[in-house]
Length: 102
Image 1 (cartoon, rainbow, N blue to C red):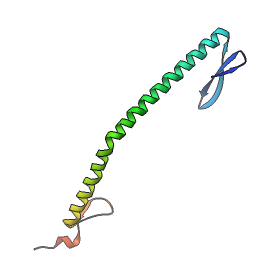
Image 2 (image 1 turned 135 degrees about the horizontal axis):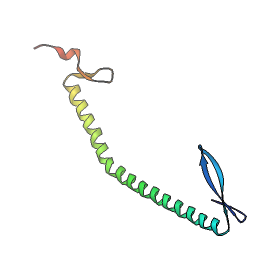
Image 3 (image 1 turned 45 degrees about the horizontal axis):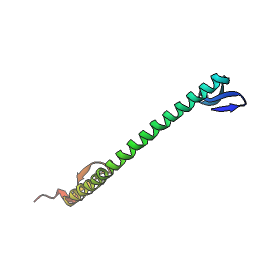
Image 4 (image 1 turned 90 degrees about the vertical axis):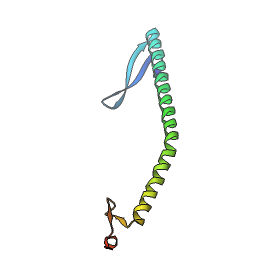
């Protein structure tokens, strides 16, 4: 939104490029400016609501991520203790030393 004297221009993007679009003057321009301000306020409120939801989800996910990390460490320790190794950082395989027959 930009007032240039008694005229109202709004910023728009055309093919990704910012442009100034002439809206009008007088009561029409005043009404368009109020509409644009309301539209901006609604978009900002929607962004704030989305941020609040994302923050809440991050707060909920924190303990789950920690549990996942601890479970991975426990599984890794159990497999290493049982004689397995990671093959090229991929699948777990029995190590050659673990292939001994009793």
